[in-house]
Image (cartoon, rainbow, N blue to C red; front, side):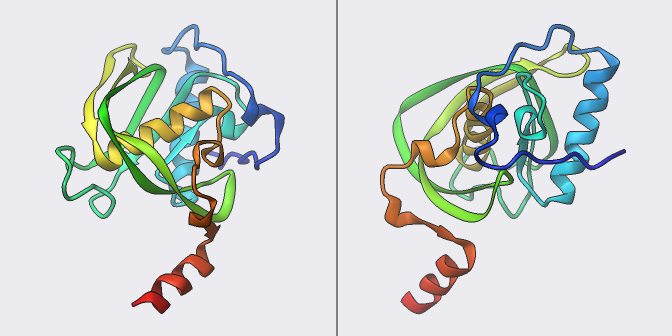
Length: 179
């Protein structure tokens, strides 16, 4: 399977609203999902939305690895590969927390982004079976991040404090200096 080219910040496809997937079971959608999972893994990402690979459709893939599962969340189960087609997301409760995020479309940078701690999401997979549920922590954050891509929203657009935005190496150096 080919590794797909990732759109970089500033590309118009990243700033538009994606269209619904008409047939989630179509062979080209299955192929796209498989290629997106391979691309996400190759890039060592936690998620990848179709617009990030130049396809303006409402679908994303993601994973929750044991090292990224949030210890104080109730969603610490490992999810090796999730796919959500034509998703909906509902923010639950008032608990919003800063979450350090990066993006394959904005390489080398990270930021603390306010995200709802608890969400409910739903959609279908490539067999048109329902997927989703009520989740918290990392799982909730990655779903919100990828869902934003489907509406043309990049994580810096969600930021409130730009002092918590920077290059990975500089942020690591600053954290080490504080210790």
